[in-house]
Amino acid sequence: MLIAASLIVTGCSGILEVEDPQAFGDADLNSPVIIKNVSDGAEGSLHQAFDDVVVVAALQGDEIESTSTWVDWEDISEGRLRGDWATTGSFSGPLDAVLRARYAAQSAADRIKAVLGANANASPLLTQVTWVDGFSDLLIGSSFCEGPLTQGGARESNAKFFPQAVTKFTAALTLVNSIPAADQVKWRSVLLASRARANLFAGNFDAALADALAVPAGFLKEAVYAEGAANQQSWTGNQFHQNRNRSGGLRRMYHSRVLGSFTATSYTNGTLADWFDATKPDPRMAVTRKLNEKGVNNRFDYFGITKYSDRAANQVLISSKEMALIAAEVYMRKGDFANMATKLNENRTAVGLAPIPAPGNAAAAQTVLLNERMAVLFVEGQRMYDLHRFNLVRSTLGADRPTMLPLSRSEILANPNMKEGQATCPKLS
Image (cartoon, rainbow, N blue to C red):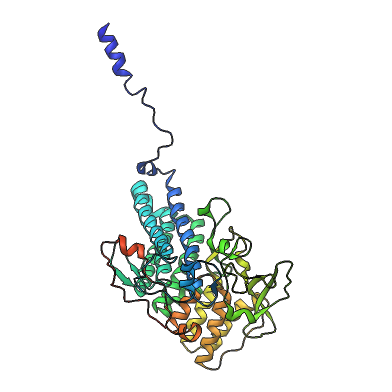
């Protein structure tokens, strides 16, 4: 009996140990069923980071100014930031978020390879997270003057991020050849378009042109947002439109260019005038206004950004419209102003604007290009870098302003390979 009882007790060992059904450890992610959630989570992290970068990049440029009461937004909008800034401000969080997205993508890639083994390269999930990895580099390089090229790495110039992004996109394009046909169609365009931008910013102009021309018309890749939890909403929709807040609006230098009839009783949409024909509205740069309404700071007249009218409004990450701009820029740099105008007119005629003639000289061509880039990419996070790379920050916004955003203070303090006082950027206008 004692032996039998002993066997029963032994056999029942662990029966009363109930596992917490809510406990979910790192090892639980190593499942072919769950691994898609890991890759989607990495891309979702990029979407949230992208929205944050759009806000601070727009505030630093000439499209948006702070109409808030936040000192850290004023610091960005008024051009006060410097290297090794004494506080984290509003610029540190966006870079931190991009770095987290990049790490999430790299961690996901390692997990996909471990879980799927020899089948990893044939999975679109590995292509997806490799793209996230590269696009994170592209976003850092075009917004912040320096950052770590690798997790925990030393400070590196923004220019080094573009070749690294090209390498990652090229690796992902190699992976595309092994994934299912439907996924190939989806991801090849995403990767070619992303690499086109990275090649342009890296100075690989012929490669940028080839990639841009290979992207089909109508292509669009968006960052996706939703009402609900705060981490699903867009910051632009929260702050750049009066439906939620009036913390950032059209910079005053462009108020006189707005066409529209506004009343004091309701909101009405208007647009900036077309740069080429000032009597025509440019629907690509739409704003919303109530007559006499000020921003939250009660100082500046407020014009909200119509495309960000709610917190669930998706944002363009990359598109065929941008590919036309990239092709036009390369043609401009080659002195081929006729083909430049042809590519720019693809975007203009698509929204009902008159086609432009070929510019007569290089200076005119640059002005035309930048006017079209501002219109097509209006408040999509690229305008400030255009001003930086064409050395137009001083002439557009004034002297002694930073030409890019500085490195995150959070990264400086947390990264053992960085120290305060080592900043060599951002350069001042």
